[in-house]
Image (cartoon, rainbow, N blue to C red):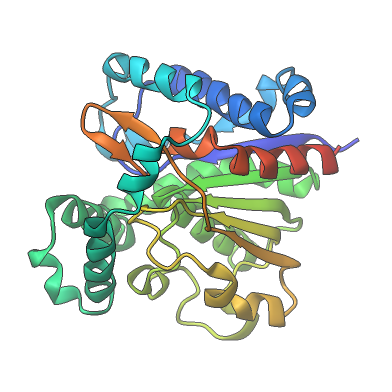
Length: 300
C-alpha cells in the first residue's frame, strides 16, 4: 500500500520553533477536518508522523517567533465554530474593498507601491527577496522541500502538498524544477493552496518556467489542484486559478483545478483584530477540512 503524506509549507514571517509549530499546525488541521468529517478526523489523528512541516522560515529570517502571546488567540479560534456577524461584516468592509482595488492597481503598476500601506510594502519586499534569490536563499529553501518530495515522488506515494501564502509560491517553483530540471517521475496527488498570491500578475511573471511556452511553462507533476481563498484576504488578489492556469488543463498536464473562494471566512483574531490571511484560520475552516478529509479517504 502506498504511503500517504501531508506536507505543509508555511507563508512568510518568523515562525515558532519547528517542533512547536508542527504540533500546533497538526492540532488545528485535525480540528478543521473534525468539523467537516469527524470519523475521518478520528482516523487521521493516528497518523501524526505522516504530517511534515517544511520549516524554511528560520533559514530565511534567522530567528524564531515566541508563540506564547498568541496561544490564547489560537485557543479562541479553535473554540469558535464559525465566523461571527462581526467577522463577516469586517471581512466585507468597504475599506477592504478599496484596499483590494488599490492592490490590483499596484499589481499592474508597480511604481504605485510606495503609496500603499506598510503591510503591502512588507509583503512585496519579502516576495522580491525570494524572486531575486539573494544569497541563493530561494534555492536553499526549495532544496528543503525537494529533500522531502524526491523519495515520495519516486515511490509514487500519495502526497497532499499544502502551501500557504508565499509557501504556495515556493511549492510551485519546486514542483516546476522537479518536473523540468530533475525530470523526476511521479506526481503530487493534490496541491492545496491557501491564501495564495500565485494569481497575482507580479508573481506569475516571476515564476519558474515563465519564460517558456507549452508544457515547459508549468509543473507537470500535479494531478489535482484546489485553491482556497477567504473573503477579505488581500494576499490572494486574483483568486480564480482555473482561469490563470487554464493552459495546464488544455495541455493535459493536470486533471483538475478547482477554486473555492465564495463565502469562505478566515476568522482568526488577535490583539490587532481580524486577520483574514493567517494559516491557522484557514486550517480550522471546515471548507479546508473537507478537502483534506476527502483526499485522505480517497487516497487510502
